[in-house]
Image 1 (cartoon, rainbow, N blue to C red):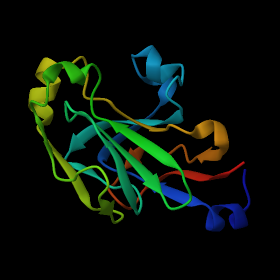
Image 2 (image 1 turned 60 degrees about the vertical axis):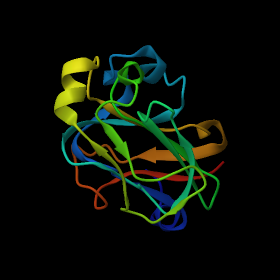
Image 3 (image 1 turned 90 degrees about the horizontal axis):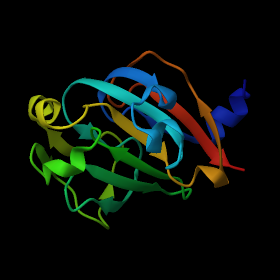
Image 4 (image 1 turned 180 degrees about the vertical axis):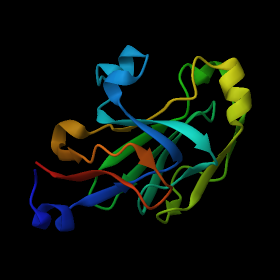
Length: 160
């Protein structure tokens, strides 16, 4: 367990969506379950859109709208990948509200999602949230079961 000092001095990654929090090894896709993209968690969504997990800059909006990357002031980079094999939807079911290079505030709505459409056409609605530069970071996962947007801390992150 990391100290309270560590928690106060490190970036808090808040839940970008409401749902059941899963460990990455529960994600039925080896790219995420084997942490090829980085350390993190996944959320089985209940409702709502995708919100910024912290204040930062948008560094990626996938052409197919299924993923958004954000960089925090401390350099931590997070990828929010909406659904599994959702790239095949070619943007259907996603309405992205931000663009690459845009500054965002914690809790800001980044994307509206039609979970029903994605659930019917993609492999899964499970949404991984991964730290893509995790090899340079010290990460503490909070191991919560449920997430509320902007309230639930999923991870604490700091430099190694």
